Amino acid sequence: MIADVAFDAPVDHPFSYRVPGGLCVAPGQRVWAPLRGAARVGMIIAVRDGADAALKPLARPADPAPVLPPGGLELARWISAESLSPLGSTCAALLPPPPVPAGAGGSPSVRGPRAASGSKPVLLLGGGRERRLLEQIERTGGPALIIAPDVEAAARWARHLARLGRVARLDSGVPDVERATSWRALADGAVRLATGTRSALLAPLGAGAMVAVLDEQEAAHKPPGPPRIHARDVCLERAAREGVALALTAATPSVETWWRADSGRIVAEPAQAGPWPTVTLADTRGILRREPLTPPLARAIREALAAGRRVFLGVSRLASSLACDECGDVVRCAECRIALAFSRAAATLVCRLCARPGPLPDTCPACHGRRLSPFGWGTERVEHAVRRRFPGARIARYDPDAARGARGEAQRAAAAVADVVIGTRAALRLFGPATLGLAGFVAPDQLLRLPDFRAGERTFALLWAAAERVRPDGAVIVQSQNPTHYVFDALTRQDLPAFYRHELKFRAELGYPPFRRLAVVSVRGAAAEGHRLAAALGEVPGLTVYPATADRRGRLVRVVVKGGPDLPEFLRRVRADFRGPGSRRLGIMDVEVDPVEWRS
DNA sequence: AGCACGCCGACT
DNA sequence: GTCGGCGTGCTC
Image (cartoon, rainbow, N blue to C red; front, side, top):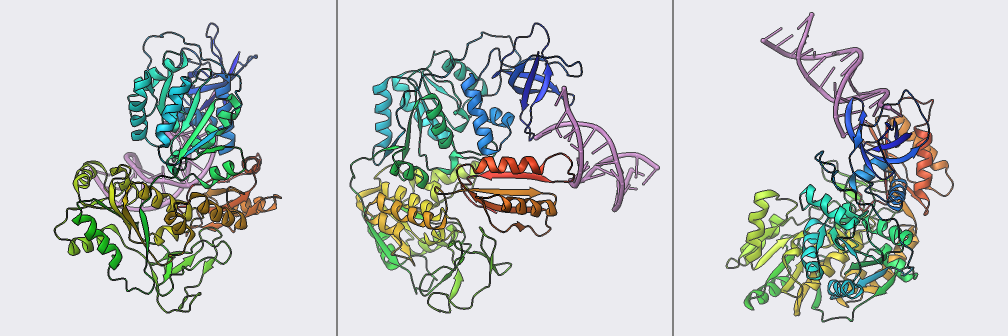
């Protein structure tokens, strides 16, 4: 017998081994096998008849029995194909680490896929969505798997579910041994409730199970590293294959998910609109930007502090676009309509999507105003201004991305008791629903202008999340040079559908997701090959290929490709040719399908 | 990914 | 004269 084994390595073919007599192995089981001298763990993806004296033998099983049922392995294959990630790496990332060499242990058999129940996925929107999800799990009483965007949320949900029975935690917030034990307890039916992050996507589930993806719009559901695929997309596929019930929750769903609901493939379950704070737009057009707080925002802070209420001030990282001080217009790519990326150092404007360089204009293309400037209020500058203005208030800055570890802890402690918290997106987690007196946004235009077609979606999500944390008698103040933008308008009117109507229109007109799929293809090492590849992609009917960009030395060639639902299949074919026999010095080709953000 | 092989700069 | 840089290539 010969076993084909996939390893966690950037090679997309399996390695074959002789199965020693007496060793009983099956697909879905992990094994130790020699690879270039060293013993490594790999996933058996096939076992076949045959003999080849040249093959090395498998060493020993790493799992007493398959961790993946046939359906799980098929799903892993689909993930690997869809994301162009190696199958071995996909399995490694989506399974708990194999048990340590110790005693053999029992052999829980993993159940196969269940009969399809055929119900459509549901999208839980609006206030109380998490409570409704919990009630639904309680009502159905079946097995449930909660996929959270991060470890903290997984832990929180483990506590919520503990009321209903034993909960298996499958995320990296618990020790590896506990993860592995939980996985097996779930497989043999001893435990029916589980929480985890994306690494729990393949967790075994009993009949009548339900999977939930929390905050499905979160980019954290597609973390770096293989397999580069969004947890929501895997769950949609799993629901379709295995017939498990699927629930997605979101305050502001991804545009892709809203569109699926629009077209009836997902059933949206909105809540009745709850109370909403007053949202006010403060127009900053033509205002000298020496001071980050407009009079309305400063007044609102004073009032909130006087009333003993807490204030959140949302700031963003430094800007990378060029805007007009007079009319607020941002310099955009004529073709792609996304903001041109501004580099102060190089004094250049360039489109991150099509790579078209724009000349640095002297005057605003919209109003011919002469004051064009890079826009930015960093956390420090805002903090400084607020301290000067409100010397008596307890003011704290909170940006966990900038301060990690012990410093982050200290920052969090200070922010927890501060009257005014100045922070980025992540700071919102400090506040419960309807607890703030005021949420103010100093310059959300910075987010709105990010050179990314998702800029509107992300800005809307942030503002909405903040508004949900403001008391109904509180206020949201948004400073903007673009006060009539549909993002702000939908926020003010608490009108979710209005935002998606506009956004879908924009996406449809320019052929962005969900109407077309995107991929970023990079070739490292050989510029000529990279350009040859870009040319080859351009020949494929149905694909739109943006001009390739190269870094300074031409070591990295990047090309953005647009295509239809079968984009991964096209890319796999092109990659196979690219790596095909007979060609030398090809460099390394790397593909990111459905990128969530640009980051060059 | 790891790990070895391989051909060019500064050191005991 | 060697030690070591990481570019290139292979792993059943």
